[in-house]
Image (tube, rainbow, N blue to C red; front, side, top):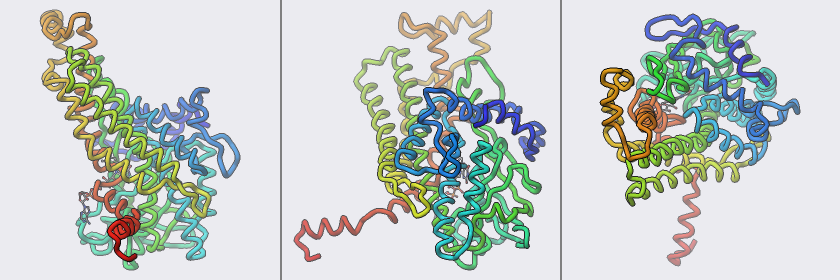
Length: 477
Ligand SMILES: Cc1cc2nc3c(=O)[nH]c(=O)nc-3n(C[C@H](O)[C@H](O)[C@H](O)COP(=O)(O)OP(=O)(O)OC[C@H]3O[C@@H](n4cnc5c(N)ncnc54)[C@H](O)[C@@H]3O)c2cc1C
């Protein structure tokens, strides 16, 4: 397993083509808007080296028998799925979004679907993928999952779009590999990932066969351009933005301009019958990850709500207690869904374990549709200072700082500095650029709520419920 320093050194050896704010970024891993994202990934190299986290954060490779980082592991038991869910909550309490889950969620999905595809079409994708996974594990790599196409007109299928490049597609096939063109959107951690793992974003029909493509490519391969946006604040202050000045993700609009992919890295090419199945399987793994990270966001918001209640002197008010219990219910329902999805996970023909689709989707749906309410409750308990508190420079000013120290006081015994820091945290979590990202990620990350509803509907045993009602009503089966 790599150390955090080896991870950063490995980024320095790459040549990511990254753009931000109209400028080409020469050393992305050091850019002030990107470094907070790198800091998050660094932790995924640091914590597995600690004895207390070894069991949860490392695993034994089913391919080599070696000890590996769990973020490079293919799940082979319900226990593996449970560790992933718990590990994700653990990391995200510190950083908000751990980011590294998506690459391994993509590889797990591929390990299920390439096997099915080989069974149906006598292709050789699974063996190829296993060789790639070995390489991924041996080098302890970070992968971005690039699934979401830019999609143009959402009512049209890929081949019907006015510009054929609005979904990524194959433009050439030759003896050595394929050439692809198009763009993938919202690619978290792409500018500091080693690899980009590309998956189709939806179901396809025969006319869309060129769009049914999956592969892995080094993130700095020729022809790739990343146009990025970071969630970190523009400047660093001691008190302001306590989370996002240290930890914040970066998303990229990743353009593939005639990118060559050698055959040994191609895991689907034209098998349109499996495109939707692959997208759905990735979504199941990723929504299962959300059952770890979203409870962690609830943990942070809940802790901040309890703390600010104390700092405002309202911790004993009955409405505050009720609201804190609402946080507890949301956090534990979502995490409970993650654990249930693990426990009821199924072994697929490749040996890879797949979380239960209903529980994984219910958990993500419930988390995403409750997040805005959780933020509202925290703002409610905190009060308007979340957005009106004068700046840190005023607070530190020799001339007027004294006024703020006097008038920002809370209950007797509460240090004013601590109260101000608490409000700065809540501003960062609920009323900043970073907060906006958390909110939209809650709704759309891993798929929109409607996609989750559809997945629940499709995989739920509704007929079984109709049979129950028939029996209860005395209607012949
Ligand atoms: C912070 C963040 C990080 C992300 N990271 C990644 C990542 O690393 N990799 C990745 O691949 N993706 C990533 N995503 C993308 C995420 O999966 C998508 O945002 C999500 O699937 C929604 O797609 P969209 O943004 O294109 O919105 P749209 O699909 O345009 O959805 C907008 C609305 O349109 C509706 N809609 C869409 N199509 C139809 C249709 N045909 N008929 C009817 N209604 C429709 C949706 O239900 C929704 O209500 C990330 C997203 C966020 C917010």
